[in-house]
Length: 190
Length: 284
Ligand SMILES: C[S@@+](CC[C@H](N)C(=O)[O-])C[C@H]1O[C@@H](n2cnc3c(N)ncnc32)[C@H](O)[C@@H]1O
Image (cartoon, rainbow over all chains, first blue to last red; front, top):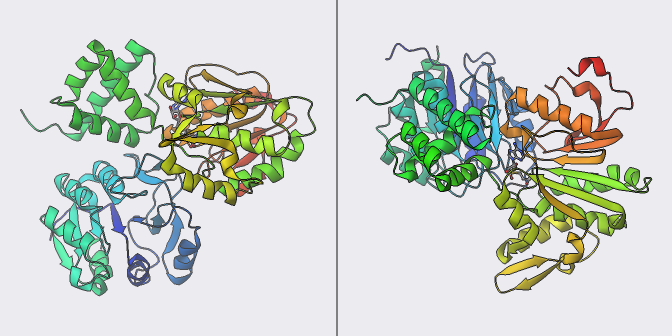
């Protein structure tokens, strides 16, 4: 296994995301050693019910990412609906209402690309279930900048096209079933 | 030659922004870096340029190249009645206060192609206030200001705008406010009557008169903290005591050194009120 210490994890998820995120995040310890930043495709009109629900369910703190807030270890940040989420090289969040990318706002590619610049070799990118191909370009970018890539085994995904597209676009480091992802995250960030 | 590394790319971006500033006076040096980098890399990939340094040359010698870059960097995406709950709060919490004034001045900063300004005009009309307001809608991009003045929008967006309008507490039929023609709609000229669209750059230009209400949504998200502070001070200085400031749903005054100049009116909708006595010593 590689020697670099990881500094952050980014996750992209779409259709089927509620279940997948619940399973992964509820298995993480309260003091997870790096920030976890998530883009989930949701309706532009949705409220933050899901974030509150997840926070109640998990040991680790879950909140909506706020602009200019600094991403801290032991916290899960979820993109607000109808905004793209970017991470700056100083580790703070930026938002944008730039048009949809891959028919999506927030878009996984937008977050992943900025995170790849911000964290370089210290980044882990994870693509989960989804019915489109958002995130595959971003995951490739993460790889180009020296980061590590993980994709949910499409056989275990509610919708397989997003993980399949990510696998096709990258030389994926780990392809793992949904129920093994949290374990791997804990192991890699030890 | 080696593949440009992150450090070199960041240096080249700085030089490009410097060139844009020196040549054209637009100052993007304090915009969100991640955003600027994303947009510049996008322009690089479609431009045929080899690298950012070559883009600097293009920017300096080809104004049309600069114009494209300006559009890339300024993000003119907008809609009518975006965030309907904001407009509802505006009706309930701000309009009743504005009604107490004989004449009302409103500054709509970063108005882009005008959709928000016309949304506001509709509300003011329905609340019986439109005839005593003057709206100054400003942006630093001439191209979008021209579109704003025309008030012509694609018809395929109307369904969503109608939905937003209804959710925002609209009192009439949304169709009353535009005329459809082929695949476009044109905003009712009555709504344009009291709106002046004008060029104003929030980074460089100064105070804009004594306003009762300032609306500036989804512009500050593109600025770094320093620049946000400059603009918030500008807004504070441009408001009458007790005047209102409305920001985008995901923007707030929390980190600003001028936050003490304002009180929350409606926290969730980012509506603030300038306090009666601003402690000037704090405003450096
Ligand atoms: C994303 S749009 C927001 C439009 C609208 N307020 C909304 O929320 O839907 C941002 C606008 O701010 C304008 N803008 C960016 N920097 C500016 C500056 N320094 N001065 C004035 N306008 C600026 C852009 O041209 C663009 O039209």
